[in-house]
Length: 348
Length: 199
Image 1 (cartoon, rainbow over the protein chains, first blue to last red):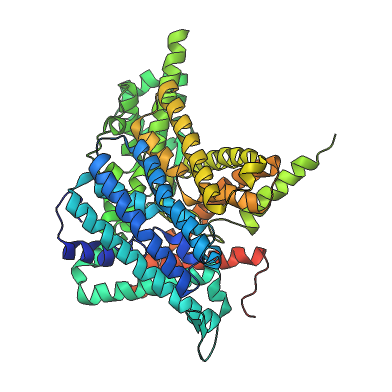
Image 2 (cartoon, rainbow over the protein chains, first blue to last red):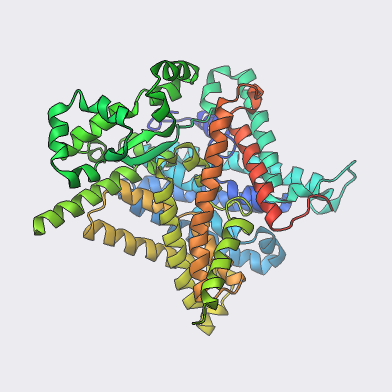
């Protein structure tokens, strides 16, 4: 999905509700579904509350928050969500307190749904108002469809009832009412959606895959295996000597090494064989071998430059997904640590 | 020296991590755990942030609940108060980090995602319903962060293996398999709380 393109309503429905369903494909907004969507009534309530939260938040984000810093935007989503959910909770308490009790604290937690934050950051602040609105509606429909289906099946198979009225079923499985059951039903819904996409829209199959990075371990350069150090010292002989003359600087250089690759560097043939088995996306990531990472980081450190940190534009793709947001912690803390150490040295 | 408080804290933290595991048994921040499991480099930092915010928010909310007038408010008002506390704690932390330590916008964006999520906001509610003391609230907050680490690490391990398994039917590859794996973990953790599958 092009984050900046203009969408028609049907495009938005197809993309945000179906192909990139927030729950079954993007795996966000799971909490309420697995924990309390155990009856059709509760599921419907949660989905109805989600609609205004999503639509109003995305509309405000699009109209007013485009130029606001990301960290302020995220807290404003909480404020907007709370302003919408609190009166609803108050109203439901007056109408039917049991309904609110059934939804538990998840009714309130709709205000901090990860779907809202994800779609506002991914879409609303980067597109025009109409597209943002279409995306919000489509996303809400996608969420509502899943939570209602999950609620229906869990009530039917877990309690042998529908909308609170007993129905005859050959067997019941009360474990479906536990969060475990929620995940199971979600798994089958996701598989059904995936099978449908694979059959009817095979060109979108790859977009429903999940991407898994190899385990990364952050280690100090001096703790690297000798072979690794040798590999990086050869091409950067002079620079490495400089680094060695500054033991405290050496300690500050943190390099990221893929755990499994520690062994693989000793046997390059094995690494090649493994890479061939990976999907294109994974292969692309794996091309960034740790020795390349180390070289880049050492060079950057010596030049006092951190290219990743300088790329702070809101226009980049970094802010478009939660995973990208997660991807910044190490780099940024390094920057903070570096600044602190530089300040400390300055004071000395 | 009376160490009761310490053991109370320890038992609450253990309870939060294993018995009540908020991610597997409550579904709180399960989306974040799944996301982080896919890209695990930031796990410790993100979990530490969650532990900090859940502890700080839970403590302040606990203190406010000691005021009789506030403790008598309806759930809707409580929700507004707890959300406001979380927002204020986050803003103060972010401002301190930005102006005192020069934190970048990217870092603060990540901090925001760690602070504003269901796990952090749920912790004061759960502490309130369990009538935890101050010490227990601290333990509960730290336990929330630890529970997140445990969950994300376990999910991460499973996702890695699932991604290498070529025998999974095509329709179940990816998110369906991930959901099934998390379901099994959830089932395992619910065993600690003594839940019954068949009644």
